[in-house]
Amino acid sequence: MKVLKLVTVPDLFLRTKSHKIKKIDYWLLELANNMIHTMDYYAGVGLAAPQIHELRRIFVIRLPDSKPLVFVNPELLSQEGNRLLQEGCLSVSNKLGLVNRPEKITLKTQTLD
View (cartoon, rainbow, N blue to C red):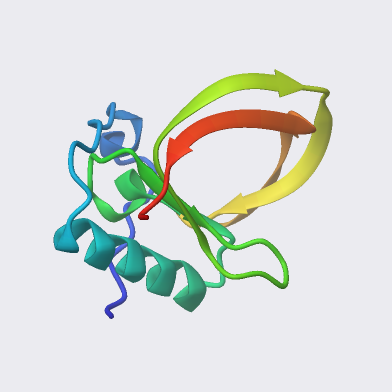
C-alpha cells in the first residue's frame, strides 16, 4: 500500500463532479486500500477520491474503534436532525471549523463485496 498525495484547497479539482464507478475490480480494490492507508497515515477519519486526485464516487471512513468502511457510488436518500460539529479536513491543512451536519442520514451504496 502507498500513501497517496492529497489535493488541497484552493485546487478546483475538489469541486469537480465525480464519475460513477461501473465495475468493482482489482484496480478499485487497490485504490480503496491505498485510500484507507492514506487516511490512516494522515490521522483522518474520512477520505473521498477527489482528495487524492481521482474523479470516482468512492469514499472511506473509519469510525472510532472499528474497521474502515468503503462506500462505492453513494447516494444520499434522506437526512434528519441537525447538529454543529467542529471538524477538520485533510484537504484544508491545519484548520478546524464549525460544520452543520445532520444527526442521521440514509445512504444507498455499494460495497467492495
